Amino acid sequence: MKLQPLALAEAHMEVRSAKESLPVLTDLLLFEQVAAGPGGFVMKHPASEWELVVHEASGATEKQMHNHFGVRVISNAEVNAAYRYLSAHKSEYELADLKQPEYSHGSFSIYFKEPGTNGWEIECFEDVLRKESGGTRLGGVRSPHWSAAISPDRFPGRGYVPQAFTHGTLLVGDEERSAEFYREVLGLECWKAYAHVVYLKHPASKHYVVCLCREGENSHSPNFRYTLTLKAAADVEDAHEWLRRSGGELGITELGDLRGGGDAASFLLRDLDRNWWEIAAGDTHD
Image 1 (cartoon, rainbow, N blue to C red):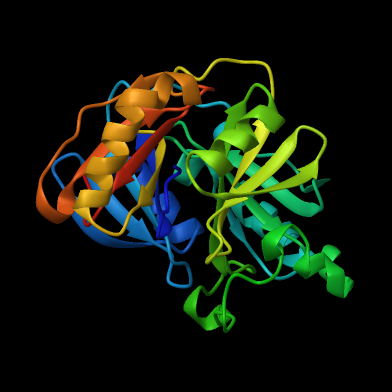
Image 2 (spheres, rainbow, N blue to C red):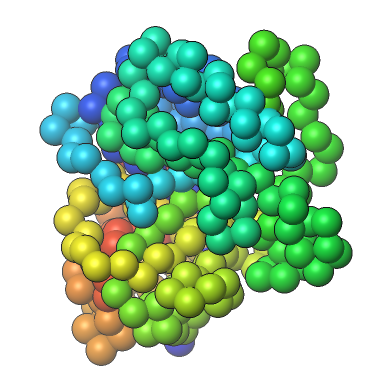
């Protein structure tokens, strides 16, 4: 048995202050707020299928850059423009660790941290896409994640336009062993990108999670997690029972209780690298 997810539906991140982090997401990364609640808010990029659920916690711990999220622009010139714009507005948005543009894993990117402790990347694969094979390899994750480009008129005065919310990242200890878990337990596609780097994704979508093999320990709270949705609440219940019986053998290090009812049934688990995942049916913004 393995899970049969309908989607990699959500990424979750934890911030210290919604007031401080929300302007970074909307003004610098083109996210829109689509819902709000007592513990945070839900953001969505207009060209992307998945959502970003933001949890507010005053005690949010500092995240390493290997736990960052990323948006994509079309051209390398936009990455340079983004660096100039973020540099000029660094104090206004309380940005930290802003890095000069650099090539890494095929992309030309800048990295920075927003005031809520989370790392972000603005990436571009213009050079890779000069070859047709550049967009078809690795499950198509480097090809455009949008059907039509967003006009600069929608994001004026910055010199760059985030066209999609493309990826998140996870720390793993052994990329081969972890990839087997993601395939055979969570039911995701896994693509070996480089030595010690694996991309995992749902086969029906282009957004993805970069698994980086690094030294370190995943001690973050469940507020930093990814959500996989199953077809129905009954499937979630069956999955929970399967993992309750066999999870230890499969590599599950922690299994949460089954929560909610009806279409909102869900549970949390920690994988063999102690990364948090949510398995859910229906609306799970909590």
